[in-house]
Image (cartoon, rainbow, N blue to C red; front, side):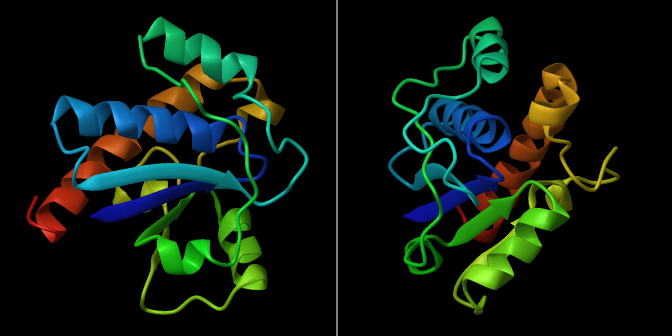
Length: 156
């Protein structure tokens, strides 16, 4: 089982969007028995809340389920429980390094690191930009490329 955790600041916009999109891609390829997906946030402001309405609106528009998703804060045990922690921006990576020393046991990277010639190196936070459509485009492409990477790396 390959365990993937998507991470953003508050776990209501970008990371639950990535979790839902990635889960949908995994299901389309019938890999749900080989890949587990979750998401978390650096902060605890939104713990227990569903994804932001802008995220829900776009996921509804593309018929991608977000059933059961609710914000949670990253925990130290996540560094042991997940094979990949995929952050949305440089600030998330810096914050991760303050929480736990990153070891070789977990791959910590930004989502855009998996995209050839990305439009952005960081996924902008639509909580502040209000541009959920652009975030969706970036996250969707990142998730597609990440899944291809995982399939080839883990021979799925």
